[in-house]
Length: 141
Image (cartoon, rainbow, N blue to C red; front, side):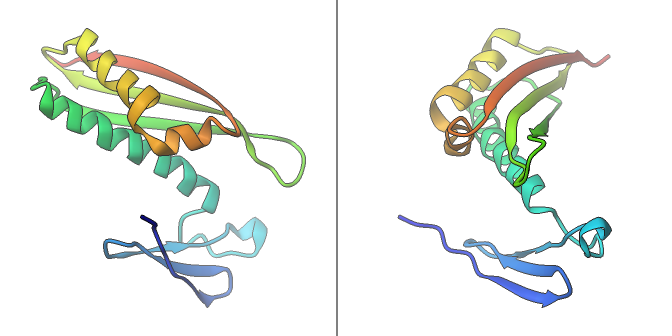
């Protein structure tokens, strides 16, 4: 199995990248690097891929475990080295769950399964960065 994307230069610092299952995404640099702020930054896309991969796992497990979760979001922050090329040395992943009746033990299990077993992007990140995960439970009333 493989994944293949095609990334095409549009203009200036802008590119459009295909998704194997359909759709496209624009990539651009910021003005400080000659871009126009009209697309995602490549390093930010890596953080989105990490959150998306783990989020899909957790959402699937929430459904399988029949958990009552009103909302769920993941905040991901990458800390960069000071030297060039700047790379992530530490990545912090904060899982936020919202609801009236959160089963904290089962939600923790869902996150742990994603982090330790299912999320391939998480495993890739651990090859080059320290990954810290935190879980936050927010009661809604």
